[in-house]
Length: 261
Image (cartoon, rainbow, N blue to C red; front, side, top):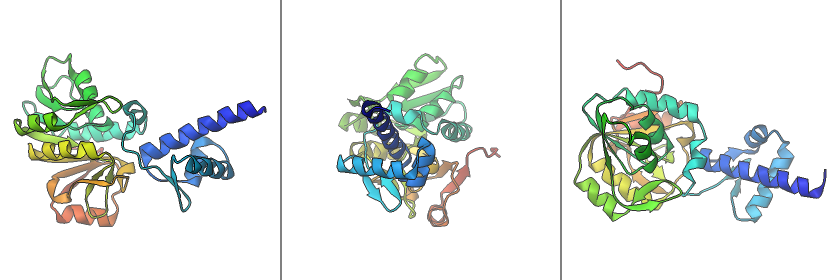
């Protein structure tokens, strides 16, 4: 194998490692070696190089990336089956005629796909949700104003927050990058936090959509505490500390795939 071919393969592995860490949070050397079908020694060399380049931080047994502005298209390819299960369970909560506020993010987009053919009002700052539902004439679609974050296909800023202060929704389906053991909902991108908080204030019921990777996930900015949530829909076996914090705050934890009563 020539050195140029080796360099190409290494570059491809580096991209895959960064994608896995951005979408799924911290990962072990063992996990990464299985995903990439290479030896743990190869993964360790890759992690050393990526850390030298300032692209990740090595931790005991693995590595982590703290990046808030992941491209939507990149994240959308990850854990689609899990997100679809969560989206289907969330969609079953909504009755025709109600208003639904959809947060940014890929799980909210998967939820939007479940709403076709329904008689609903959907409010969103998520441009991909808007594009998904724009041609569905049964849905009253409200697109919030704001500054466009092109890579993450969302609208943010004081215009978005002002719009939300003039609106009301029966349901908010909220995304997150991480849920701490104390039940705090976190985000990696500070600019999204004020919009998420305004969404919470504008809604009667707040439902957090959180797949396995979000416990504990990542994020340095606190969006809200468990007392601001009504329901968490997840496919994860929620750890005892987190479940206790949520239940003490009166939050219902619903497993994706459960039949609605």
